[in-house]
Length: 276
Image (cartoon, rainbow, N blue to C red; front, side, top):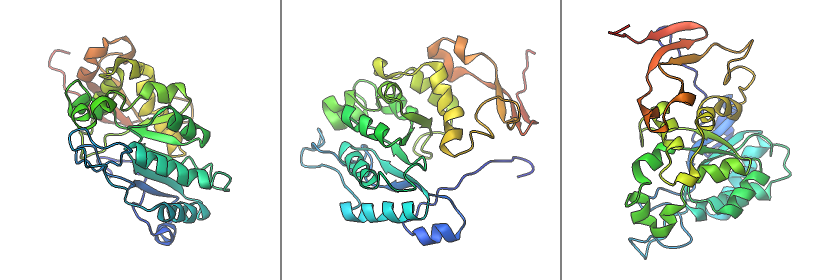
C-alpha cells in the first residue's frame, strides 16, 4: 500500500449479519443478488423477455426471506446494499425496505445497485425511502444503443432502461460504478457514457456525471466530510485531467487523459508527455 495506496470500503456480500458485525463492519451487501442480469435473462421481470417469451427471470429470495434479512441488518444498524435490475426485483426490494420504513436504522443511506428497469412509481418510492442508487453508465455505452442487447432482450422496454435523468430530477442520490469485471474500471468512460446516454432524454450533464464518482460517492459511504470535493480540510485525493470536462465536447469525454494523480497530497502518477 506504500507504493499504491488505496481506500477500500468493504461491503461484505453475506447473508450472515452476525458474522458481518463480528468483523467490525458497518455495511452489508454490495451485490447481494435479488435477481440476475438481462444478458443471461435472469433479471426478474413482470413481463416475459421479448426474445424468450416463456422466461421471466429469477427472484433469488422469497418475500419473507428478504424481509427477514433486511430486518436483521437494520437491527444491527448496518447499511444495506442490494442488487436489483429487473422491475420485479426492484419492486420486491422496495417492498422489503418499505416494511421497515420507521425502523431506527432506516436512515443508514441504504442502496440499490443497478435499478435499471424502474418506472416512475418505483423512482418515487425509492425517493420516499431516501435510498441511494448505484448506477453503471457504461452498461448503456455497451448495450443501450438501437439494436443492442437491451432492445433484443426487452423489446420496447429496452428504450426505458437506466433513466438517469428521471432519477436525478426526482431527487435521488446517484453514485457511479463499473460493476467490474462486467465492464471496465474506467470512470472517465463512465462519465462519458452518462453524458452521452443513447437515450438522449436520460443523459446527465458533465457536472452531474462527475458527481457520481466524487461528491455523491463520498456521501454514500459516509465520507463526505473527508473527501469527494476539493475543500479546505479534506483529503487531497484528486486527479488532474488534460482538459476541462466542463468545456470538452461531450463526444470527446472518453478521450480525456489523466495528467497527474494525488493521494493525500502525494503525487502518485504523472503522465509522460512527449510534446510537453
